[in-house]
Length: 114
View 1 (spheres, rainbow, N blue to C red):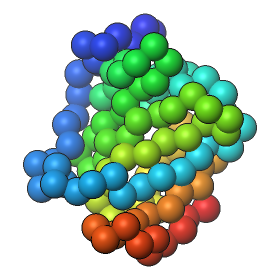
View 2 (cartoon, rainbow, N blue to C red):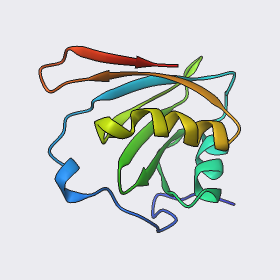
View 3 (tube, one colour):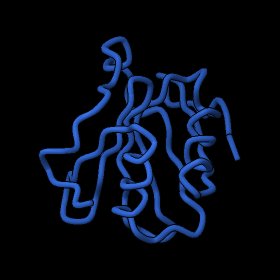
């Protein structure tokens, strides 16, 4: 499946989360191909689009992430804070292990999930 800049269609981030600044940052252990990770999320019902030559955004009603192709593969974006651990479970369902830090609106790290 080719993911274009027009995207795959699918769920969009809940409007009540649009005002959050990026509040999650993490890495995907052992992953090197952001397109492969994006396709895995699409297979789980998420929307995805190519946001740059080698960056992808994945989105659901409760999270929106940009997957960045550095080593290790990184992601950042917005997640509904009570669902941060669930996000790591989605990575696991997609075949990946992820670690993430959650930040509050003041920029203070409030949780680490592994």
